[in-house]
Amino acid sequence: MTKTQMTKTKVSHAQDAKSATQPMLNPGDEAPPGTMGTGEDVCPDCHGKGRIDGAPCVTCGGSGTITRAIGGA
Image (cartoon, rainbow, N blue to C red):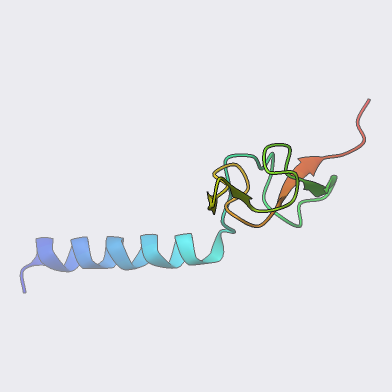
């Protein structure tokens, strides 16, 4: 294995590890789940059902909920 191949391998493993620790965000989420100042809300597109016309809702990823910022000034 060449030095270039080893470097690419290390980078790809680092990216895999980084993405594994980051929570999955859906298009309707305003922040990652568990972020201070956020809470779960019913998806405005599927109304909490998780599906639209038999297919998983794109906005909530099929969960029926989104993460939304709460409070504020």
